[in-house]
Length: 624
Image (cartoon, rainbow, N blue to C red; front, top):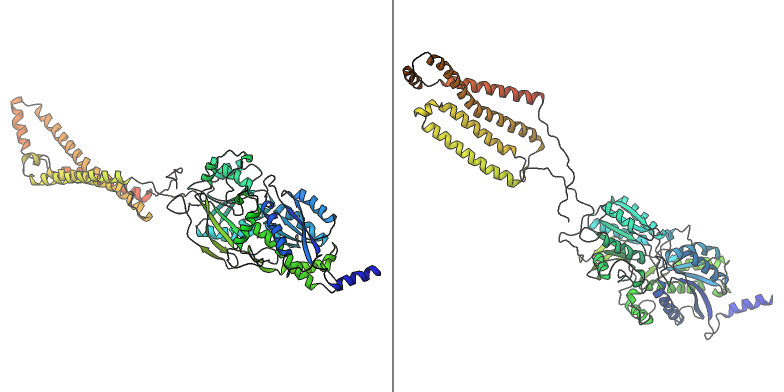
C-alpha cells in the first residue's frame, strides 16, 4: 500500500526536476558493415541519429523533463545476428519503449517479433515491399519509403520511352523479390512484358542468360556490393553501350561504381565508369531542398553540412554507407520523439511514459496511434505515414552523365504527375535504344542499281529495234529487203521489242517500286506472257523464213539435179525475181502464236501462278 501511494504521488507531482530528467530508452540496430552483399547504412545513419537525439534533448518544448537514450548494436545487416541482439536489448534492463531498425532483413525479423513485447518499430532504412503487410508487421512504420514506390516511376519512364519489354535482374533477398513481383504485376496491367533473372552471389551466369535473351532494358535490384559485380560483368559481356539501358537503385552512394580494393573485382575503375555511363536511378526524395527551416530549425542542406562535419575527416561522404539515407534516420528520431510527446499528453492521469512495460497494451496502443498520425516537416521532406506504415514521398530520377548524376525529374505517385527536365542523354542521336532487337520484315527485291542499269540497256535495245523498224520500212522497196520479207522482219522486230520490254516487268518489285498484293499475280502472268509472245514473234519469224526457204530450196534442188549446169543459173534467176508470198510466213507465225495462247490460257485457268511468301533466316543489319 505504501509503494502504491508513492507511485501515485510521483505521478501527481509531474516530471522530475529539469536538472534530473527521466531517461526514456530506445533500442537501435545499425548495420555498420555490409557483410556479404548487405548495406552498411549505419556508418552515416548512426551519427545522424546521435545528432537527432542531441537536438531533441536540447529542445524544451519536446518531451520536457525527459531525455532520450539509445542502446545501439551493429547488426551487420544480418537477420540472425539481429535476432540475437533484439533479445539482448529486451532482456537487458532498462525497458525499451520503442525500437529503431535499419536494413530490410533486420527490420523484418525485428518488426515481426516486436508485437509480442507491445513495441512499435520505426525503420529508417528498410525498403522491402513485404514490410507493408500490416497483418505480418502490425506495429512497423518506416521513414524510408517502400521499394514499391519506385515501380510506378519506372513504369512511367518505360511508357515515356516506348519500351514494351524489360528484364529484371535481382538478388534473391526478399526485399528485391517482392519489388520484382510488384513490378511484374504493374507491367502486366500496363501491357509491358517483364522477364526476370535472379542470382545469388555471382551474377556471371545470369548475365550470360540476359545476353542470350536479348535483354536491352534492364532493371537491377540488389545491394551495392552486388551492383558492382553486376556492372563489372556487364562490361565483360558487352551488356552496356548504345543498345542497352540500365536502371539501378538510387540509394547507392554517388561513386558506388568505383571498386574498392578489398573487393578484388576483375574490372578497373575506368572500365566501371565506361559501363556505368547513361544508366538511370530512381529513389524517393531523401533530402529536402526547401530553404525553409524544418522542425529541427535546420534546412536539408544545413543538416547535410552538419553531418559531413561529424563524419571522419578522412572519409568521403559519397563513399560513406547510408549517407543518402541519413536524413531519414534523423527524421525517424524526431518521429518517435513527437510520438512520445503525443503519448505523454494522452496518457491517463497518474500514468507516465517511464512506466511502460512489455505487457502494457494501453500505452502501446496510444504510442501506435501517435506514430500513425505523425505529420511534420523534416530534413527529408514532409514526414507522414500511410495506413500500412509506409512513408509517402516523391521519387527522384537521375541519370549518370560523364561520371556525375544529373537530376532528370520527379514523379509524384499520389498525383501520377511526371516533372521532367528533358536533360537525358543517349549514346545515339536517334534517342533511347529499342527494348529489343528490331526485326523488320522486308521483301527481297531486285536492287535498284541493278534494275535501273538493266533498264538503261533495255531502252538502248528498244531504240535499236525502233531504228531497225524504221530502216526496214524505209527501204522496203529494195530488192534485198523484199527478198527478206519486210513484213516478217517487222514481226521479228516486234517480238524482240516485247522480249526487251519484259525486262521492265521481270525486275518488279524493285527497291522504291512496290506493287499491291492483288496485282502480283497479274504481274507474274503478264511478264511471262509477254516474254513468250515476244519470243514466238522473234524466233517464229526466223524459223518461218528458214523453214519455208529450206522447203522451196529442197524442191528446186530436185529439179536442178536433172538439168545441165548451164541451165542452173537462168532457173535460179527466175525464182529470185519471184518473192515468196507473205501468207506462208504469216501462217507459220500464226500457228506458233495460237499454240502460245492455248498454253497461256490453260496455264492461267488450270494452274495459275500464285504468290507464296518464303521467309529466310534473319540477317544482321547495322547495329543501333
